[in-house]
Length: 188
Image (cartoon, rainbow, N blue to C red; front, side):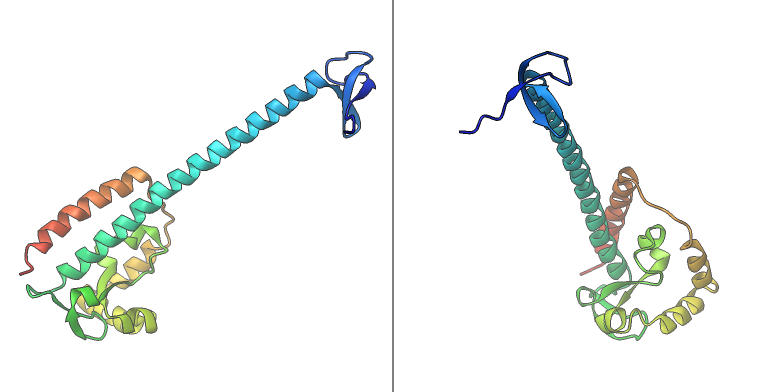
């Protein structure tokens, strides 16, 4: 076994002619070097704990976002359906059961201020929502016919930067769960 220590002066505590370990250009006595390592390990553990806490917090927030997306999508599609659960695509008019349609957004979901705004969402078939990227021309025409000026208003609002906090997401989830319960009662 190779001896990793030698005799010298400690750069940390100043001990003379003692067992030292060379680290970089400096030498440290065994006691000071062990204290440095302990401090490094403690700092590393604290950093990992902070990382884990922020990751867990992100998971909690992401879980809230996912739950809210699910409840909001069901609410929009059931709200627009008849008592048998039949709903029409907002852009092409294709009728199908609400479970086979998607929740289409006029302003894309990345704009969080309008992501869960019911003025911005309507049921759409997979063809219009995914394959035709929302079929925006028809969506704009239908929104203008339904509520004149609404597309311009939504575009203006989408320029505002917003990030919902956990408490706001929780409150939105509670509100939309209550609204979903009410609209589900109309289904046979």
